[in-house]
Length: 102
Image 1 (cartoon, rainbow, N blue to C red):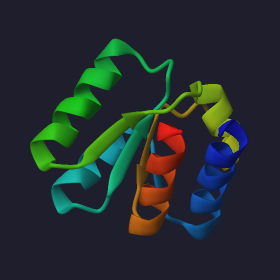
Image 2 (cartoon, rainbow, N blue to C red):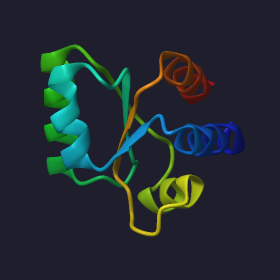
Image 3 (cartoon, helix red, strand yellow):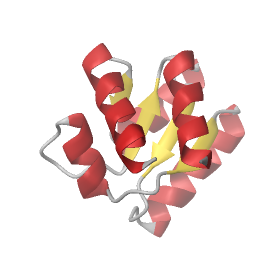
């Protein structure tokens, strides 16, 4: 599961179907651009609360990744640590949800 999930995140990034960063993700929620929001396992309590509350309000599914922000950053090729991602493609979001449930 681990390699598949991270590999799929990398594909999403290459396809341009990822919104990166907590602020950008939360700003995209009212326009329903993201089908799925993923936050890192080591995200702060404030970040988790902010993201889950916004997702709940706007009806967007939100899941906790089984990976740290460092691992996610490496998977998507981003040098800074990434705590929150928004997936803007329905097929990618479905596949990531199923991989996270395995």
